[in-house]
Structures are given as C-alpha cells and as structure tokens.
Length: 257
Image (cartoon, rainbow, N blue to C red; front, side, top):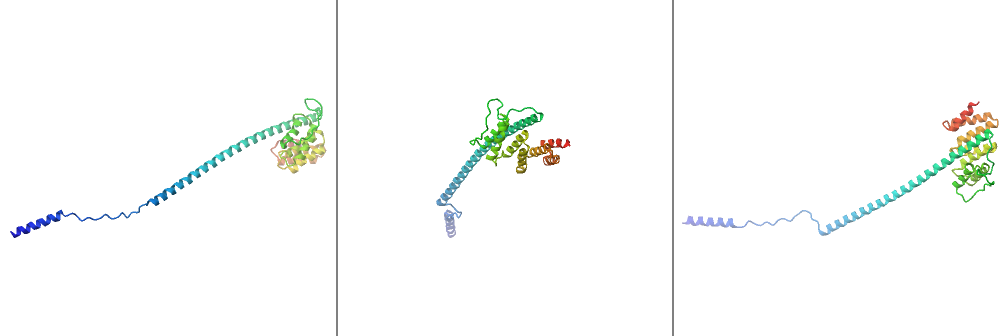
C-alpha cells in the first residue's frame, strides 16, 4: 500500500513537471545600428542638394555648348565670307596682270594705246581725284578699275600714289608699288619705275610681287644698257624663286646672252 502511494505521488509530480510551462526568456535587443528619423531626413536633404547641383552643372554645360556652337557657326560664316573676298581679289589681280601684260605687248609692238585720261567708252577726259570717304579696299579697287575697266593708265599712276600715301601699312601697299612701277615702266619712265620696284624688293620681302619686281629691275637694267646688272637681277630671280613664272622668264632673258 505504501509503495502504491509513493508511486502515485511520483507520477503526480512527473505530471506537474511536464505540465509546467518552459521558462520565458526575453529576446535580446537588436544590437545592429539603426537610422533615426533625423539622420534619414539629413541624408535625403543632402541627396536633394547633390541632385540640384548636378542638374545646374548640366544646364550650364548645355548653355556653354550651345554658345560654342553659335560661335563656331559665326566663325564659319566669317571664314566663308573672307574666302569669297580673297577669290574676288585673286580674280581682279589676274585680270590686272593680263591687262598690263597686254599693254606691255602693245608698247613693244608699237601699237597705239587709248589716250590718257579718256575712258574706253569715249567721252570727255576726267581727272582722277581721291575720294577720302572710300574704305581702304575701295580705294585700292578704284585705282585698279582705272586700269582694268576704264583704261585710264595715266590717271591710274596718281591714284596708286595716293593710295600708298593714304595707306602706307595696307596689305595692298606692296602691290600698289608694283603696279605703279609697271605703269611707269610701260610709259618708259624707267628711273621712277626702278624706284617703285626697288621698294617692293627691299621693303616687302614676303610680297607675292617681289619676284616680278626683281625681274622688272633686270629688264630696266638691260634696257638701260647695264648688262651686268641685268644678269645679276635675273640670277637672283632664278636663285630665290626657282619654280616661279618670273624665274622662267629670267632664264629666258639669261639665255639671250
């Protein structure tokens, strides 16, 4: 009986132990770092500022790019305009060369030329007077037109002289000296022609007409009876401008002996 009671008691205690709930252990706090509301707002504000700065930089870059495109277009237009002006000037020079060459040929052949101061279309003589309201290029073109269009060769001489006086530093001054010398040479005024050609040779070493000026100095020397001086000038043309048309003409003169 006693054993039965003890056994019953043990069974009851086991049942109580089994029915007893497991001890509750509170979960430990999360130890990983967390963002507070203030830190999050600060970071969002910083990102907004960065985005705004980047957008402003992109806008400025686009404005600069547009401005550069406009400047390039403007420069391209200026270059095209200048190229056209250069082509026009080259064409006028070519016509002038041809006209002066024709005059020189006529003089050598003894053919008559139009009377000085009378336009080719006829009419009364007109005295060439400088127009101070003209621009530099217009004044030069006016002197050229006296030869090419109007064939007023005597009037062209003072016109070129006036241009040289008014525009001594012009890009057309060297050519003006040359054509002044050419017109004087055609008239037989060799001393003054020599002075004009010498000016081109000595003062404008980069002029496109320097070779032709040396050649003309040689022709003036030959016509003046200075054979040694002529040979010296012709040799200079060949030595300094070996591949030019002036050099070819100088070689031709040298071959005459």
